[in-house]
Length: 162
Ligand code: SF4
Image 1 (cartoon, rainbow, N blue to C red):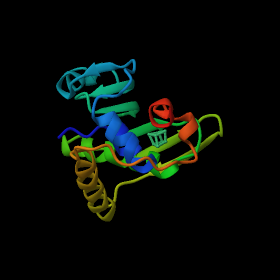
Image 2: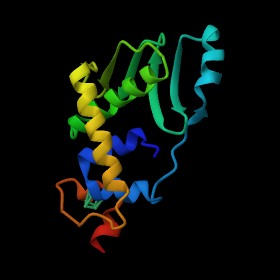
Image 3: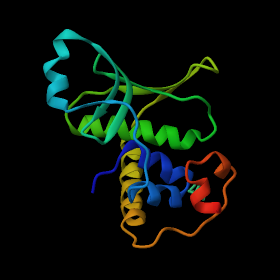
């Protein structure tokens, strides 16, 4: 089962949103869709790349020297979701033998940056989260509607409340 970065994020936002997204109600994003092999081939030409979709699974905002990931966010509204999304990117790339040291959550509007690591304990917790996500999206029925503070800004608002 393929788990994307968005799914990690939505797990922390709303299980119903996660299920809807995983079951095909999703929006296309503009990205450069490439495979890791192609990226590695091009490594000698550029140490830094922007907006990379890898394996159709994780969408990296910025990769610095093949060691540091950056995830750019507009606000800190749902920071745990952003933290675990970035930890998942570190995990995913390390599994592909890319030696990622750490990541940064960048908030350009707030002029802030948060350093994100993936310790052994966090990796174990992440694997539990991945297992829970698989359980949610393999369910036949969409999770029950539970109203959230941010429903009005959710892409599925009309689906849930009309
Ligand atoms: S509108 Fe609210 S309940 Fe529906 S998917 Fe979005 S966040 Fe979840």
